[in-house]
Image 1: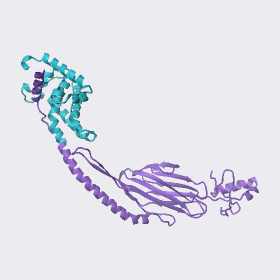
Image 2 (image 1 turned 180 degrees about the horizontal axis):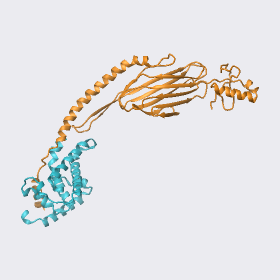
Image 3 (image 1 turned 90 degrees about the vertical axis):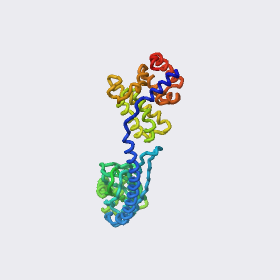
Image 4 (image 1 turned 90 degrees about the horizontal axis):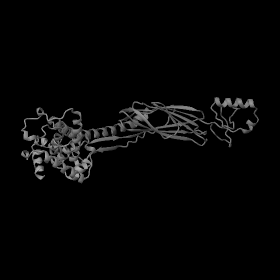
Length: 277
Length: 148
């Protein structure tokens, strides 16, 4: 049997050899070596460019943001850079470098006065590359004595550039591919501010900006229990109609309102309670 | 990558040739094996077993190619100008079944250890050794005395 094995080994060695060369392996090797240098140089260039762009944009953001009334908008831009590097254990392997950023776009709104109102804001353009995360940070404040009331925020964006990911507020609705409506219902007069964040992912590289329309329905609540007790049914109905027309909110069980003045203004009593239906 | 190609190309080629018995096809299969190695190198964790990986891939590609062929024969036209002695190995093992030919080739051409062959074929070492010796015994009975 060993003789046969030896004969087989001998005859196997006489089999023809592989004549063709694997040309692709050599080309790939050169491509890999070149690619590594190219990627490193490209990454450094991109990082330098972004650094320059953001340092210039700091002042640009202040001048471009438009509001109905003068207000301060903070233009802090946070850039977090993550570099992922892939390499296998093989010495002749491909390597790729990916740089991702997280950009925060702040939108601050202050409402003053005692009437319901709407403000339209346009953010400055931000440069993004595919894969970046963009967070729109909205803060709405009320400097009135009446509290914040209900806040409806519509954030419009370019859906060819950005994909909507999530909202920190649990009451929101994606009205269309490029528009998100976030709703906030306050429950007491003491609530003077609200805030939420929208997270987006950049699906292409380029410039993005946000157009937001934020409206608040400020509560106007007065307690005139003694007056209401004296009303007849017809007067009550008239008052309800008046309240609805002028945005004066009522609880389910009690009716509040300044019927006498007709414009919704009046004095607050200590018994003010807001229960929004 | 290149070092693996230079080290194993002939063994893989001869192993593929022992199955498909067609030189151009065996060359294509060999190239395909190394191309797959290049494409999948990131997913290979243990490069010490790369030879077994190559031979297993060659076996699978060879069997797939055989299934596509309608007739199986030694095609003299596809062979370069070789003396008939160069193909003696193929003639020697031609009387065995496909599984036996592969087993013999893994041992003779691939020079794998019993443990490695058992892992590749998903069998125990004892079973592999038994099949191997049975195949050799069968070969001994069919091969003519003058070839030895």
